[in-house]
Image (cartoon, rainbow, N blue to C red; front, side, top):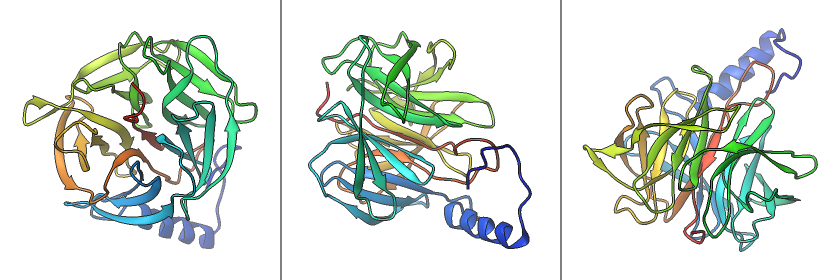
Length: 281
């Protein structure tokens, strides 16, 4: 439920319905439900963050697009296409089917989006060039498709994921592109990134991608295509960048995460998505 005019009073019935939805999204045991994209079949899945995770196929596979990044906002999942870079798809989160696409207009600084995150009603994105180069924080106008640069991140690899922590009012990102993953914070005013540290599992750095805060307040990530743990869901400590392996998702090729949750404030919920497709350098 999105309240665009600030906080609003709700009836007892509405409160009951919202509570029911919250229980479905995040359980009393601290579990939450994420959406993931399987790059091997272009399908949408749900993941329950139990240990080990449990996954359910929603559907999809209605096209040959490569969705390297997804983000939920207003009941719709947005997917950044890294095959036809100029397209931002709208996906039905109940069926996984693409029902509409927005033509993007890129600035000179870049031509592909690698990560997406709503902060209230603004869609932020990691922007770079398909052949590699500088990485920028940008915004996407969902009415016109115009991509506008906020500023350079000063990170030498694409952003494999963005996610906003409401409790800290802080945007987090994870680096991608084949090297050891690094957890970052991003200044929404300038785009500049600050390193939290290399993401490590058992004190060893590894390849990770996708980044998402669950409704349970936990930061989640995925191992990337080139890592032996590919297909596993992990948690990441936002203060230390230390990771914990929750186990295999049983999804053949998960590369992106997002979550839809209820926020009783002005704007969209803070979901994230992210992942960096193997088809993009």
